[in-house]
Length: 261
Image (tube, rainbow, N blue to C red; front, side, top):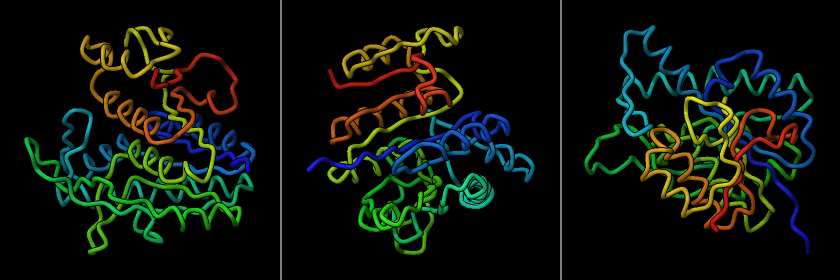
C-alpha cells in the first residue's frame, strides 16, 4: 500500500521577522495540498524581547543558552506570540491549524541537556515524539503548528532547537508517511560563500557536508541545521531540502537538496 505524502516545513530566521515575507509564506503554505506540519523557531524575536526586558541572550555553537529568565521569554515568544500569530494567519487562509508546544497532547518529550563541556541551561534534547497523537490531528485535517518548546513530563518546559523538532517529528512519522522535510529561511540554500547569496550549493551529501565543516564553508548555526537534516535522512525520511520561501511551491530550482550519498 502506497504511503500518503506529508510535508513537514520548518521556518526560521528573517522569514519570521519580516511581516511581508511571513504573510507570503503562510499564504503559500496554506495552498500546499495534502497533509502538512509547520514547525517554527523565532530566536531573533526572542533575543529582541529579552533585550527589551534587560536580559542578555547568549549563543554558543549556534545554540541558545537558556537560563530561567530567558526560558520565560522564549516560552512567551515561541509558544505565545509567534505560535498564535502564525496559527491565526493560517486560519485566515482557511488552513485549519492548531498551535502546539511539545507539552500539548504530550507531543514532544525531552530532557534537560546533560552538562558536558557547556551548560546550555534549560535546553531540551528530545527523547520521544508522540506520533500517534500527531496523526490524530492529521487524520482530522488539522494542521499542527509546533513551536520550539518541549517538556519533560515533570512540569518543566524546555527550549528545544526547532530544526531538531522538525527532524525528530519527521523521523517519527516516516514509517507511516512519505516525508518531504523542508527547512525554509532567508537564504536560497547552503552557500559556498556566505558573502555571495547566489552561491548556492545545489546538492550536498554526507561526505561533502563533513568536508565543508572541516574547511569552514559551513559554520555556526548551519552546522546543527545540517546535522538534523542528515539525521532525518539516516532514519527514514525520504527527501530533505533547504532554501527560501520559494522552495515549497518549486517556484525556483535554486535550493539545496541533501542526500546520504
